[in-house]
Length: 70
Image 1: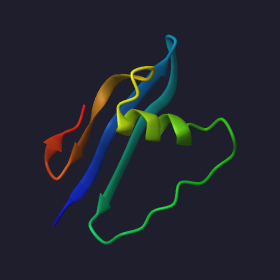
Image 2: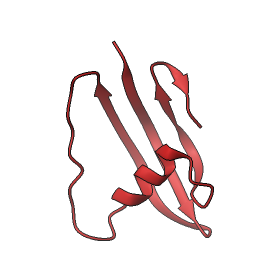
Image 3: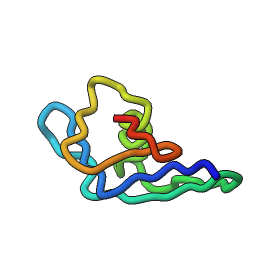
């Protein structure tokens, strides 16, 4: 079963930490919605997962099907 696992993720943009210890597990077949007010890091999380070079992962891990995607 495929799995996206995010553990204790910290992400910075221009030396300002935006995400502080985010953890999330999404298993194959599940649907998750990220909701919250503007400025809470939803887009930052997605940019980090997709590998946008402007977003620096300072600690934590992102794995897809057991493979490190960072």
